[in-house]
Image (cartoon, rainbow, N blue to C red):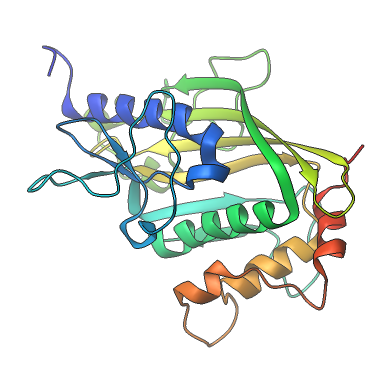
Length: 268
């Protein structure tokens, strides 16, 4: 490790590097969730190791780490995903989508990837903007993401804001990423585009991502998308959550054709 560089800083930098290099390949590789501290190699979740992975330009993605090597997790066991739609959703859906814990977070990523690959071909993810931020004060605004012309807006994980010591607080970092997703609808052949803006907040103690805030999705998903997600993850029911339910997207009586229309309001 270079002198003067803490382990937390090094791990945060490595995680940021992995996100920047793997998110553009999300629909091919899925979510990358850990890395080998000896080789720097990145890995998908162990439970999803049977998925076929394609090689990335700057990463080799083996399905198993070196013998005796403990992977460094990218996401906290209590990772929280938060998204507030621009318009309130009708009852019984909540006004704000919040998922907490690795099982639900990983399953939601599988749901998005599986559903989009089912409805669209030639999916492409392009990085539009990447900003690394460190808060200047404890009262930094935790809700607003960096604007198009403001690279100095400071963000920190709200879950840790009140409990973080001064030394740890200075190490808090967040990563703002703006993505553009494009694809071709399999049913109609039309082109669709989405702009997705997210902020990843890191723990100042172990560099794991503790909060993934989706700052915006344009065009915003419609109600049927939330219905499908909630049913797939079995949220709001007494039935136990299981991996198989998370892998199969469900809708309230909608066909793939109608669901495709819901997901592609910006089709041209």
